[in-house]
Length: 207
Image 1 (cartoon, rainbow, N blue to C red):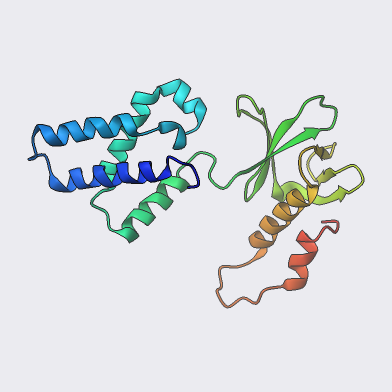
Image 2: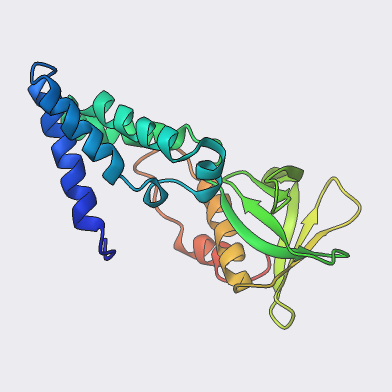
């Protein structure tokens, strides 16, 4: 929003919405305005560079306009619900990625943490190399001197060990502990929050 082109982008979308509401009866004038709007949209502000390289600016711009058209008749609540559903349908929804260095590895990789598993991923291709589910974990801890996270597994001979090279291991520890705490709760809305267990799981103690 602080970018100098923000106000211009807002005005572009407002113009497009007005054109959609007015219908197709405006003739060539509406078409000219739409064409002018297309040239003003800067897709690099809306999508990742890798998608721009793959699809091209014109295709992305057209898809942005199509999306605005598809949702122009939605009221505020339905638009928010549609946004949430589209967000939840993304392949990596709910997954947090961290750059780490696994034991015996010479390069940084990705440790992706979901609500029920940890995924070892290739940082270049995004390919999942190995998955460990939380229900196979016996314990986890952090070596604060070396910034290493150690996870003991019930079904494998070797533990998972990785060093957090770009951030504090506390983030990983809290995320794992928080997800495990949530998995232990029931769906009963009246269930009391076990503060002691929550802080034990997320506060840096051994799991």
